Image (cartoon, rainbow, N blue to C red):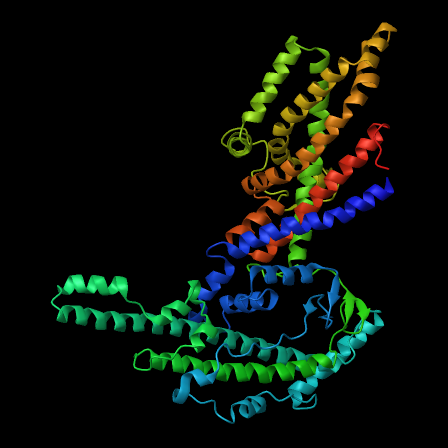
Length: 573
């Protein structure tokens, strides 16, 4: 059995790779995805804006211009516990401080612009002068910050917490990293501005070419309107061939073309390129400064490893764009809520459906069998959305019964309650535990009623099949009571299909909880996933897919283990 479990665990790896790859490709190739939306905003946002920070984050994490398969490989490397290359640091708040990424080269060289633009000889020198390392004793403000950083490090040492090799470098690292991120964001924005300028330039050149063709046709006696239509359909600028969707420019192809300098928009292209070269030099100079601070080791290294070759560390699922928090923190808050609902719902499904299925099989084609089967089919036919709305409208609304709360898992004053119910003087307090159970009643009902029909029908069918076995007839012939036949002979030998249903019920419950959590405003995995989908929060979506896939695969493995426990004839050796 142990060998089988180990094999199954290893087989989970390619399965998870396949699931996450498929979802990643759907996100990366979908029209209007995150990257496309941010590219479209490229030249119209400030470097300090949220859009530019998102653009920089995705560029760092995936690479906006790389092939989707390469982007998936980068994501996979980040969530892998095995890390290669330069090690990250972990700051005192527990967040990763990744090594500064290199600055991309200019997408097109200055030679293409000819005499229209020449890179100043002192461009790099001026950028380096503006980005020199600030000494630890340079001014009262920096000295105070260094003293504070050293004091924080000493406090951590006294608490047996890890510190970096040189905590005095923390102020310089924070400042230089902030400058570097802003410089990189500005450079990234300038590349989008250049792409927009080239797209406008190509459109203007097409207009110029169409005007020339129209005038030629009119000169040959063609009606002006007809000539304009013919020119619009037959003539387009050669530069349009290098402009793709979302203003993605094919720069290698563009470099092989001779620029049309008479187009009025040519000046805007030159200006955008001049600005981009200045921003690139500034980003490269700020990179040198932040790298110097990073090498000093202001924070402790993350994980364990040997040098900068290979190390082990926790998976990095990234941060949420909309909430600005690590994805793992969001999942750590939402997953227990969803599991709580499912842990409460699954036993209720089995405790109700299995006995009803057994009785229906024992009283086959009798009144109980027909009535229970009809009721469960009716339950199965009721949509969860409709049931949730009706439950809120009639059972929770104060205009009707008002027996249950409308939303959430706790009352507003739940944090002030004692955990267990009890008397406080002459007043009975419900307590945190009962308050949670009271809030869970309606959501759990919406989760369980559909599972009753499936499990009851499956239990009934499995037991009816077992009732026809020879060993059951033999037991009855020996005078064994119907109760003992049902429980000790039929039910145990009907457990395998019932266990199989668990594998189907568990994923369905997770999927159903998405709807239920939305209806009852419960902050679980369902609400987290839907919010991420609406906001195109790629990291949250991918992490949720990964977590749910792991839970489902574990459920499949658990079902196999239960098979062997329920039936000694089943072996995986």
